[in-house]
Amino acid sequence: MGKFNLIIVDDHSLFRDGLKLLLKNYFPEISISEASDGQQFLNMLASANPDIVLIDINMPVMDGIEATKRAISSNPDLKIIALSMFGDEAYYYKMIDAGVKGFLLKNSEINEVTEAIEAVLEGDNYFSKELLYNVVKNMRSSGMFADNKIDLSDREIEILELICQGFSNQEIGEKLFISKRTVDKHRANILTKTNSRNSAQLVMNAIKNKWILV
Image (cartoon, rainbow, N blue to C red; front, side, top):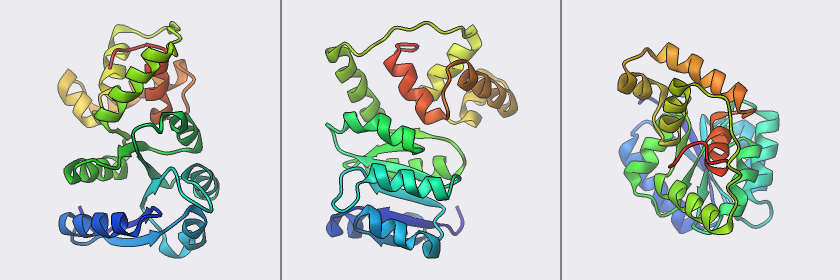
C-alpha cells in the first residue's frame, strides 16, 4: 500500500505512541497525525487531510460519537474506524449512525488493525470478530433480538452472512465463484431491502434482527 494519511484520536498518549510505532513499521509511507480528544481532531481535520481515522469512543472534551458526526457532516467521504473497549456496546449503534466504517477492539493484535485499515481504505467495512461475538452474546442475554423477517433471496442471505463475517466484496465473489460486480449489485439490493444506510448499519441490523447467525 502506498502513501496515505491517518489520524489517531485517543486521549491516552501511550496508546497513540505505541500504535503509531507499530503502524509505521507496517506501512512505511504512512503519515500519522494525533489528537487527544474530539475537538482537537476537528480543529486539525482540514490541515491533516486524512484518508482514514482511528477514533476512540470515550474521550474528554468531545467524545468519538459527536466528533464523528461533525467530521462526516463536513466530510461525507471520510473513512472512520471506531476504537472500542469491551462494554461499549451501548455506543455501537450511535457510532454507526454517525457514519463509522467499522470497529476495532483496543486490545486487537496489530495484524488485525492493519487488515482493518486496508479493508476500509479499499471501500469495505471491518468489524472485529471478537467484538461481533460479544455484541451477539449481550443481545441474546438481554433479549434484544427482534427476529424480524426480510424478503431476501437465498443468494442474498448467503452474501449477507459473508458480509457479517467481515469478507470484502472481492473475497465474497471468490468464495461464491461470482464476479465482484455481481456481489456489488447484491450488496446494494440488500441495503435497499433492509433499509440500511451503509454496510456497517447492515451488519448491526442483521445481528439485532437475527437475520443471520454470527
